Structures are given as structure tokens and as C-alpha cells.
Length: 88
Ligand SMILES: [Zn+2]
Image (cartoon, rainbow, N blue to C red; front, side, top):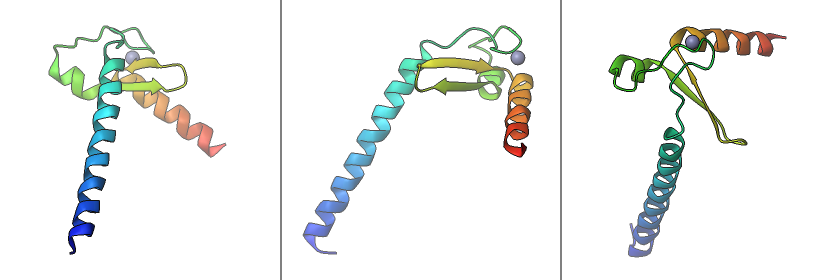
């Protein structure tokens, strides 16, 4: 690999890293607006409960910056509804 190619490759990595960092920080910003309950059934979400943190799903509506939180049960219902929509 020539030195110019190496330089370009390095620049590409840098740009990618920047994009990831930017996406992460905006995600984290949205995380501050995380609701404390499920959007579907209003079940309380415990941020300190690791199991809940890993099983609950966050959906971000980019257009409105709306953050919706779903418990696993409601997420399943949402997915089923989406599948139904796709099938129609
Ligand atoms: Zn729910």
C-alpha cells in the first residue's frame, strides 16, 4: 500500500469514528428524555434493573425526537402489528 493510500484509509477511519461519536452523543442526548414507563401498558421502567435495561426497547421517532419505551410484551405486540401491516 502506498503512503497516499494509507493516508486516505486513515482519513476514512477518522471520518467513520466521528460519525459514530456524533450518533452516540445524539443517542445519549435522547436517552436523557427516556420515559420512565412503557408506552403501551404504562408499566414502570426501572433504569437500575439490568434485566429491564437489556430487554426493554427504545424507539426513537427521528422527525419529532420522540422517545418511546416498550416493555418486551408490548414490543412483541408492536412487532406483530408491524408484521400485520406489511402483510396487508
Ligand atoms: Zn408494556
